[in-house]
Length: 392
Image: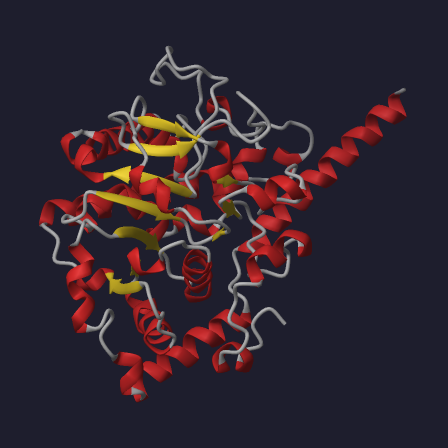
């Protein structure tokens, strides 16, 4: 009996260590993606076509035209952005109605612009904008800086306390592994709370993470009635009501801390953030961004004991009461973990697949079975993709 218990504990420990190694592996940038960015940056410097206007002058008016369907991506990954956009356009009933807004950082701006300038879409419009091109107020700049500093402190706190012994037997430390994820420290990942400031002229947008792939037409999202709420999101999973193993409120928030509202249901499913529809007009009328910053300061003052590391926990608190549940088949998540419980029929029926987790589809650690659902949208005929041996 004792030996069986010891063996069980060893198996559990091995599984947790494996997951930790997955997270560590996810921190690296593949040589092929680094090569792709360098080649595209060089192309931007020497090729006038790679520096041509995005979008072309005749389509600039669409960027603020609310009769079009606007999609926002915040990313510093050129390959991932290309897959999100190509898969969305390929499956769109009316691709000419789509306007993509890509916001990236300064170092990625040149390769990102070069890719979409030299791989133009026939129908949809793409805008690429670097953060250095925004002229924000001092108040917004200070808010972004403070937000990043606190998130960095939270991730550093958990990272420094993530020791091998923590993973031996107890499961409570497994969620600390998010501190190893590149997204924990990513400016682009945390910037989503400032979407209303990024796009002051838009009133309704669909937000897509860069680790998703779109499989079906999503145009009906823009006509979806949010019933006065600010964000439309998948809450219950495809497996049924309150079926969301590993992503309930208690998996993110520390309910033993008196600051966390006691009226929140610990067993409620947390909403998914990979694909959301946002009513920006309603957001601007609310105090959500202010509330988000309030929770960050409370976390700082509590010694970072309010929630697990990651972008979602403070959003769960700030958006409390402002979320409209949408059909579970709008998004199936968890494809970036060791295995997905969703079967083939569910994966095929999902409008959006989200590779949240350490095993991103552009990494070698990704599962071949689900990775192919993403990689089929990579343009392998592109000369830079071939030269850099992407996914080979």
